[in-house]
Length: 363
Ligand code: PMV
Image 1 (spheres, rainbow, N blue to C red):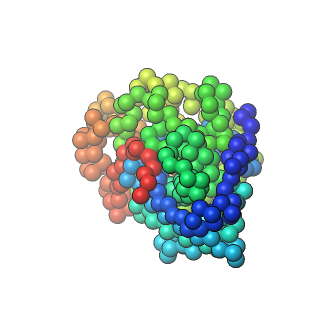
Image 2 (cartoon, helix red, strand yellow):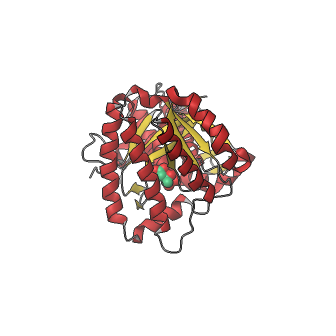
Image 3 (cartoon, rainbow, N blue to C red):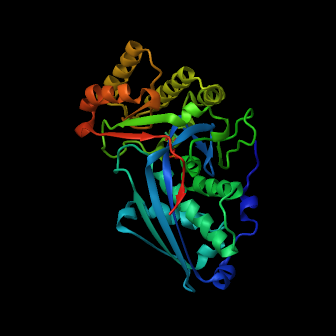
């Protein structure tokens, strides 16, 4: 097991004196994407350490844009957040207090966070992943500005991923575009529980053409938060088998991504999605998160795939909405199918058409 990198990231940490001598006031703004997990992270240990490794791709149109301003204050730490970000205020404040050992200058600043999501609330797209990734990038960027460094190479992204993970596990993956992996897997060099890795160099180009039609069956607030979900795994009778299976699936999907094997990829993606819901349903006293329309959509996707003989598939997060996955070469027929047959099953006919994205951007 890889040992904690906390010391690696606290070395040369920037304190109040450095902030004051470098100019007292700094700001940074980043757009960071949401991501959709294909191999699911479900279950964690203390310190936001995953029980199993996970794999995802970053979205393009679903992102959070965050600006962080810090100004030296002798009165200690204080925080203001824009009205749109108010819903996340307690988590953001807790996070900024937790990461003070990494960014000691936070002890004496007035911090101002302005954060806006590109996607509507409660459509089952993880805003915590894009939100914490964008905030982590801002923090690391301000640290670099104080130190007088420029450039966003691998060490910068590694630290940003590490910091994002402390806010929300899946946020560690949103620091990278394309495809990412987070969590220790013996067979994957450099994989660690501490931060995510970009898989983009080893992935067949066809996987960068991945599209995601997010079929919004319900936009009601989440019945089960991911925080509650991870806790359920602590006493789950199938936990050990699940963690072992996730590793097997991750190794298999890495092979499929390398070889460009879409069929195998979709088989594993669907099995992971159904396993996640199977785990939730077999936890004690838990609701069924899938709705009748979710199941109808799944059946229609399977029938359409058989009828047309094309490689498409789906994944599902911890909610009722279905993510239909397909590559751009089959987009015209798949999107016609979505509009004709699946849209009527969605709440207010809501479908978000997104795709694999290039990753965070400085704004
Ligand atoms: O990062 P969290 O704590 O919000 O958990 C994410 C859980 C899933 O979205 C269900 C799976 C994943 O790997 O993103």
